[in-house]
Length: 233
Ligand SMILES: NC(=O)c1ccc[n+]([C@@H]2O[C@H](COP(=O)([O-])OP(=O)(O)OC[C@H]3O[C@@H](n4cnc5c(N)ncnc54)[C@H](OP(=O)(O)O)[C@@H]3O)[C@@H](O)[C@H]2O)c1
Image (tube, rainbow, N blue to C red):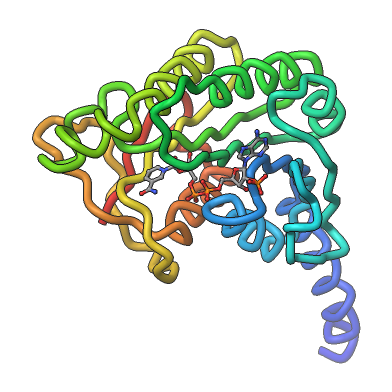
């Protein structure tokens, strides 16, 4: 018994190292200065991953951590995206812009850069956040959203998100497109619906923290590979 107990601390530390090693991934997050991206950053750091953030204004990022590296750049800048993508296992795009009626190209142009860089650097997985109203989720946001808000204030944004989604689907890479319902700043519950068939569905709310919870779970399981899950309570 005495000899056995001598082994225990050693065995424990081996197990700990193994568990820690297993969890560590190199992850690039684009759009982490706030919102879903910031939640992903915090949750992924808590799981011991190595994170790189690509941010237009790095000074906006309030998080500091020994496993966090911040690089300055815009998703529309091919070179900046290329540099940030080197050596990563996963790229997560959470970018968003304010409602506008002007033409929008940042989502498709950005994703094009991301896909090219991922291909070049053999990155294993892309997780891209679009939203309710993209692709076949259009018409599932409820009367006000489907008939007033989206057509009037988000039309050009969602047209460009659709272009981005098509580029992703046409790529040879592994991807998950995440379409949240209506975002709140509520806490993480871990309890929400993940819908791949939106027939008869009307999306409701979901917290940014729960969207991040889903994304972080996909880092481990990639259960929704090459799918476009809609997240809603
Ligand atoms: N609001 C809703 O109810 C709702 C519902 C479904 C889906 N969505 C979508 O979910 C996504 C995330 O939304 P959110 O509210 O959590 O975040 P958000 O406030 O839209 O934040 C977007 C992030 O994208 C970054 N970004 C914008 N343009 C960029 C560029 N050209 N290059 C690099 N980074 C750029 C911003 O960084 P900076 O600091 O540089 O600005 C910021 O960190 C958006 O696409 C949004 O449309 C929203």
